[in-house]
Image 1 (cartoon, one colour):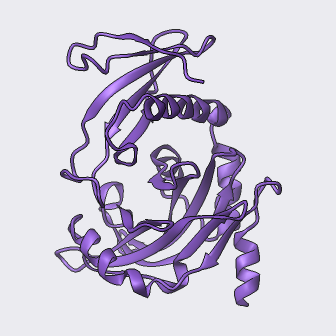
Image 2 (tube, rainbow, N blue to C red; image 1 turned 180 degrees about the vertical axis):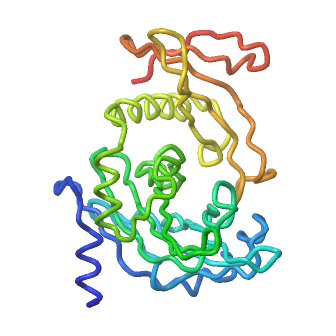
Image 3 (cartoon, rainbow, N blue to C red; image 1 turned 90 degrees about the vertical axis):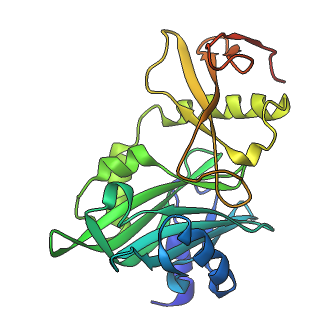
Length: 280
């Protein structure tokens, strides 16, 4: 396929006013960093894949580089992963997929496609990846959905959406985009806005030492009329600590009507909550 035609196809989005471009990226300069970071997740011989690595630009601003990678387990089985290099920064994230975690029963043959699924949310981009795998001795397809936070310029795996795909044989980006449109939570934008409010409060009030080394997880169950967001440790890249372990630092409740916040930051072990000042 023509290179520029591929770029145009990758740029398709449901919101034309917030154009996202995936431009093919030379991943060779990141080879050493990718290999070293992948090894921390017990992925040996990790290499970046040129044909499935892209710089991501949104509204004319380069957010970072999405790097598809392939390596092996200790037994020699294929493992696929995604890596992220923030703009003007070093490699900060490696996320193992096929062959690890929920995909341990599968072997990754190759990464077939990477593309934009949706950017309906003005602060978040959904990236879909399709893999060719071996499952139960037969060739099959598997997919993963990632989120790019425009403000923080970070990459994370959308575990809820990815687990929802399961073993469905989606073989191309058009099929994955169609699946996403039919299964995305109807309240996705509202949920994201709550998390953004919490993130803004945490960063403006300097509640953590390094905002790049924390993650925000919205709990599925909370008190009536309140939304609970956990502030979690994030390890890997320049963030110190064991990448296999994530501790809750503290939690924040957000009133669904007034948007006032309560936090146990001063006493997370006992869970004693107090009011946070309103953010501007």
